[in-house]
Image 1 (cartoon, rainbow, N blue to C red):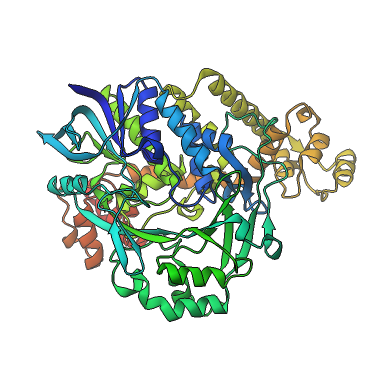
Image 2: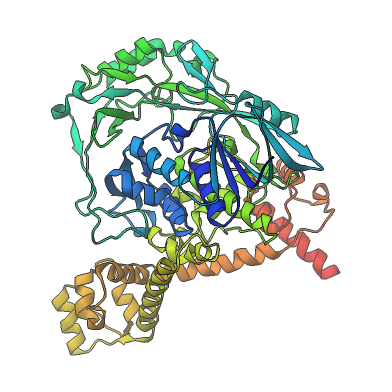
Length: 623
């Protein structure tokens, strides 16, 4: 008999992080995939990270995941986005060699202790007493498991669309998983349909690179993993290129838009708002003269380029016309055409914050099956599901990150509390406490958990502790030291090009000025000269954000008080004066356990929360 502690179905970014986490936590783990050669394939763009997504990658890394380390090993361009803006909204992004990326992840999986990798298709889930007992495969295996994690990506009842052509597929030239979708329906899981898409890829030697704008990486690239040696990090830096659509492009699309599956009615699923197809962009933003396109190399050899911004499901002959109408692509040769794909996903409101099903408690879901987009969001969910499935095996408390602890906490709370009506992706604007959630503090915030679970080694943990202690001591010192407007201090400020002061000022407010640099810091606070440049920059950023963070900490305290205010059992929302019918309907549907959960439900207004607070407080007083 095949018996495992944890079985993971699907070997995309969620499945790999889930299975690696559970195996590294000592659990006998099975990773089942329909193709071992496609483990962690980058189905869409050849890049990891970006705005807010970079935060998630750093958090995965801090918890002991593999995504950032793989990116550092296989990256071909590294760049920090929003570099001119505040540190809290900057995002690390790397172009990757998509072939090397999946080979790296495949080799990691095949060589990890406690992890077995098996190629087959799961066709049925067998439930006994409201628990998963086993799964059945197409080749006839019965695999018994204590915990089951589903990370099926776009394969559940997947269907590809190109013009009027449509056919079953989970990814280009790969069969879908229809039997498993049917099995989930039989279990009573509510399945819905989403749509996503991808652009064409073109041959490099058919592009007129000299006619379009070159876009290079950072001169001093930064790695994504905290465990990568920053000082000796010297990766390949391939160029990307920028070009634009134009009036001719738009006219071609408008003339043929009826043949686009999204407009012909062929596709019923809802597509991603923030990554629309080019036909959708031309239709919705009809006043725009052009749309930017970003040509990204798919491997370090740069033989093929991905046209980011030109996602489409138009017929192939129209795709050719559209591409050739664009500057620099007049002679472009298509190697792979763009397509749209529809797939099943579950209503995430049936999940708990540990990503397990509320009723079938040993069933976990992570990644696109939960209605998200993006490799990063998937990897984060997979890691959390893997950790929690492992903890459940040992009958230990669940691991749940709060919204003020991590972007991962925001992601999961959004999914299980609000659900999603469109493919979900992360933005910095979704995090109320983003000043606390900078990329560079991910190891300080989360490293202790990774170490506790055995996913981070002692050397890395100690390095993080030293970093945290050094910065914390510096902040404490700057808070305790007054910088007086003495003649020497005024001369010092003038010397480094800083505005003078007229009254005594805390040192942290001097160091926290927007004009402060590590060179100025060396002069103003000489004892910091021996510290490395990275730590100096972190001290300056901590000083800049200190006063704002104090305000956010007060908000968090208020949130925690709200979180602890339990909504009484059997409360009759219909009887509460002032609540709209929509609010009453949503409260009855979601049945929030506490006021904070109620506040996070989409459509629940601040005034509705105030009404609930007043009524609950009155009940408590009356008791």
